[in-house]
View 1: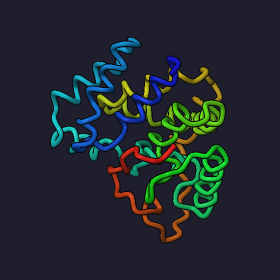
View 2 (view 1 turned 30 degrees about the horizontal axis):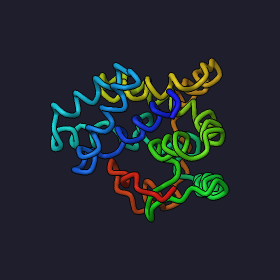
View 3 (view 1 turned 90 degrees about the vertical axis):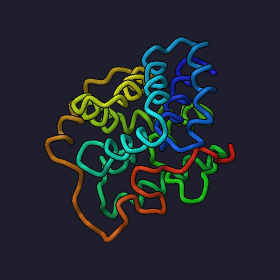
Length: 207
C-alpha cells in the first residue's frame, strides 16, 4: 500500500464502531501506522486503547449522529432523507459492483469507512473520485468534530490530508452548514437500511 492507502485503510477501521472486533484489529492498525509514521492516527489509537470498549463506544454514539453536521453516511449531507438519496446509494453500489467490490449484507455504501476502504483496497481511482465528490461533507464533518473537541477529529484530519486541498469544497461545506441537509421525509429509517445509528457493520466484505 502507498501512504495514502495506509491512511485510508487505518481511518476506515478506526471509524467503525469500537466493538470487540475493533479492539482485536487495533494492534494491526498500530503496527501499520508505526511502520509508516502517522502520529495523529497513532495518538487516536492510544486514546482508543486507554478509553476501552465501553467508554469509546459511548463516545462514538455521542459523536456520530444524524444532526446537521456529524453523520458518517455521506449522502446524508447531499441528499438528506429525500428520494434522491436512494438513487445516490444505488449509484455508489453500481460503482462498487463495476470494480468487483461487494458489500456485506446490511452494509451501506456511503458510510465513510466503507468508501475509505474501497479507496484503499478496491479501486484507487474510483475511490478518490467518490471521496472528492463527497469532500464538502467530509470537510463539514471534520469541522464539526473540531468544534466539539472530539478525538475523532484527528482521524478526519488524516483523511482530509489524502485529498487535494479544495477551496470549493470548503465553501460548499459552509453552505451546507448554513442550510442543513435536504429535509424531505420519505418515511425511511434514518440510514435507509438495517445498520443501527452509530454502529456500522464490520469491514468484512469480500474484495
